[in-house]
Length: 97
Image 1 (cartoon, rainbow, N blue to C red):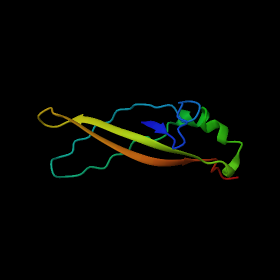
Image 2: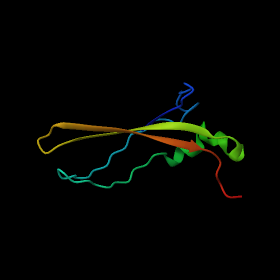
Image 3: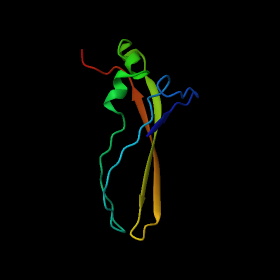
Image 4: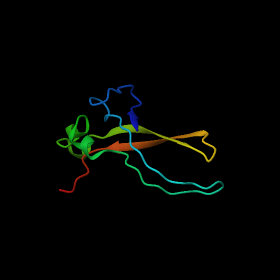
């Protein structure tokens, strides 16, 4: 998972959360679908810059990022497969008062 912004400010830990990798395992049979869950924002990212800086700004400040999600795997004959998707995430201090 990596993050970017449309304004070009993309320094991890300054402008966007740090990228991270994880692992998961599932089997998808040919011609079918599968549902999985995965982490989009690590809990620790919420206490690191730039997200921690949103805590004191209230809902007035919104940080819009695009998360790039890449999945890698292999099929039954060990041929590499890859899928990439993008999610728009709006970070703000949405906490209840």
